[in-house]
Amino acid sequence: METDLREGYPVVSMQRKWRKVAYGGMQPGFDDNHTDDSFLEDMVTNANVVQRDLFKVMQDSVSISQYLCIVALVVLVWNNTLESAIECHSLLLLDVFLLCSGFLIVILTAEAEMISPGLVLSYAINIFFFITGLYALSPIYHTLTRSISSDSIWVLTALLLTFHLFLHDYTGCTVRAPGSGKNPTLRSNISLNTSIIASVLIASRLPSRHHVFAIVWFSLQVFLFAPLVTYCIKRYSFQLHLWVSVKLMVVSLVLIYRLNLFLFGLLLAILVFVTLVCPYWLIRIQKYKFEINGPWDEAKLCFDITD
Image 1: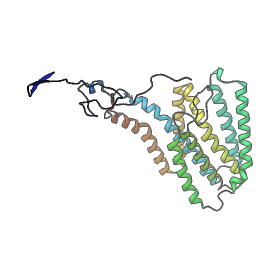
Image 2 (image 1 turned 90 degrees about the vertical axis):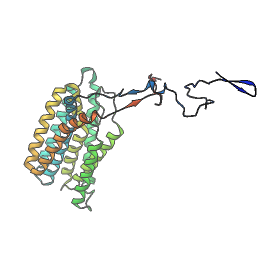
Image 3 (image 1 turned 30 degrees about the vertical axis):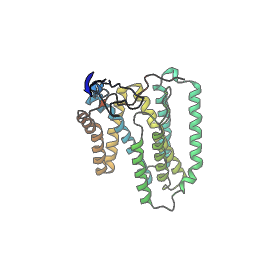
Image 4 (image 1 turned 60 degrees about the vertical axis):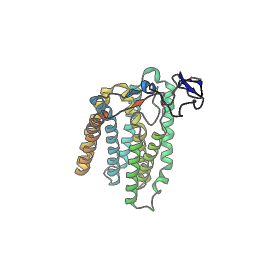
């Protein structure tokens, strides 16, 4: 309280106190953006920053390297089929082997209460309609790109596979796994569609509709069900997941080495970069992360809405 004399009369002025309120407009005597000394008392730095372990990040990156090798093997089969190094009946036998082994792995790695006769029957019916539909559409796929040059097909296929790898969900699978409450994301579905288009483009360059049916069946099995199989293996045993991934990398590198030395070096460099360099890079830049939270942040609900 202050007292002044003006023309002989005492004038008393009251110092108003600033209040921190969300609504109510401007407070008399204070600017609209006024803050007092207590404004930064609630500031918190790096509250949500997670300290990552290098070895754990390297283990998580194995899933990316594993799928890169799977795609590399698919491209290798495409190339050998186009060059007639793989016959049609051999490719069909490979398709049947992959289907049976993948189906068996999914059943063996799932918990007993997740697998029921009805679920197995449903899978079998869906696979039957899937194969029947592919066989019926094979003549259409065979003549789909007859007026397009092979160079354009390969360039477009490479672009589609690149989009597929960038959009692929490396933490989940393209179809819902048994007992899993997580559905595929929109990004994962877009990634799957790009791989299907790439498969159809390659299949359209083959000499007969039987080749088309075999290669499309093979490609869709890999792009659609291989993430499901690897996801079930990883959920069942992480050590088994690492063992399968390492074996897959070795097989991919050996087969690519026999095909082309440059592609072998490129694939090896990508695997080293993804598995070793990127995790180390992430750990190194983690120390530069600086996060600030305070009363200026948006309000967040702290309870779950179940209704």
